[in-house]
Image (cartoon, rainbow, N blue to C red; front, side, top):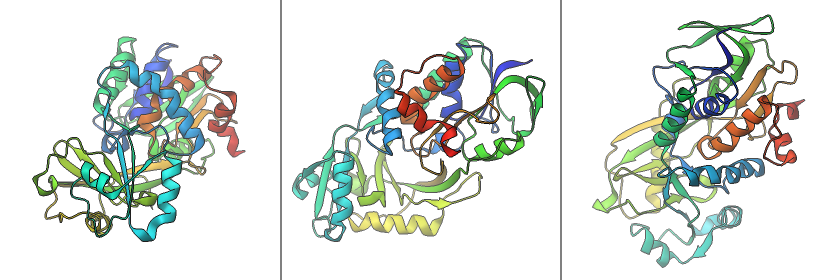
Length: 358
């Protein structure tokens, strides 16, 4: 047997799991692309906003905070600014409460982001409890930890077949055949396809495209200290990035799993929503791209052994929360696989279990 654990997927879910599970036995990570974090993990405008998401997601995020605080440089101050037009008061009030914003005046908001348009911005809220995540530092830290314990990360290893092999599994990939006692399905948008290859009933994961554009700093402003800016109901957002600004229409368009790219029309619509709230027009794009945010049917992560085939372990459905939940999600996976009592509340563990889908 090549390894105790075959982890399919080299995004943040699979790599963080490799670090944790390397404490329990031998690990092989099979990544379909040439490098780790090629798809959703490498295209994320990652933030640590622990109050973002469904209650179970919030629970995982809050449980991840101690880890983030323990690794120097992973988090850095950013903040969130919520702005809305007068006709969006219901969505604004919902977000203000749900994400624990402090209500501020439009003048105060313009003091933070001076390009906000007085004629369109009618309401604003600010939250300091949101921080940037250095995704590369986090990914590389988990990868180094896994490799230090002997884990093997295999790139260009797209899985084409999976079969039971005695008490374990045999996985055929573009990089060769591998056997393992347990499969960990961290395949992101391809999680249901991996399950089907293994003869496991898919759970109904849905990959949704999100497009993004990088634009020059508006009006030549120094945007480095600006917060992330949201429209109500997250119908667009803008975030400083390397001296420029990332703007997204924050769309959720259902897609088949693929190497996603930005939709020009959707991107234009999102940029128009952004432009409506600011005084500086978008004159050119520096770059554009898209990623797939994959959700389970109830939009909560799925972490646990399959009900019918317990040596097939689900670690999927991260949606837009993969980075901010990965410390607690990977620890829970290792606890369940290692037969340890999880550090999370039993009710939260149950909310994350694949058995909730019957």
